Amino acid sequence: MLIPANMLDADTLTRLIEDFVTRDGTDNGDETPLETRVQRVRHALDKGQAVIVFDPESQQCQLALKHDVPKEWLEDLE
Image (tube, rainbow, N blue to C red; front, side, top):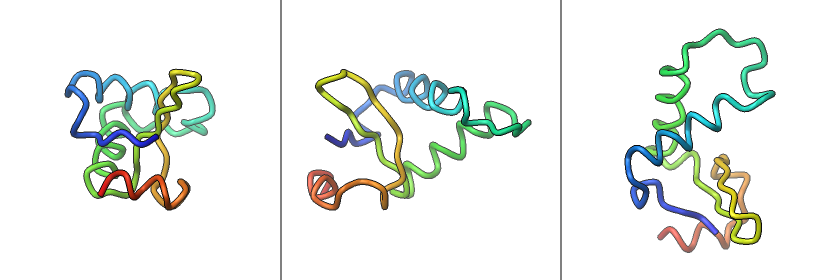
């Protein structure tokens, strides 16, 4: 299930993005400041290049590139 970013409270969205960009394996030695990484993800969400995926079974959210999710999921956003 996809969750439109604009449906989340601003603080909730920021915490979700911060969680994503600080997970193990996401920095790959990148020394980019947290604020810059958060802005990049927010920009990708705003441009429609990334989406928020919610798994009701595990109650977990993930961020994914739009082209990596099944096309039928994208129909729900339109």
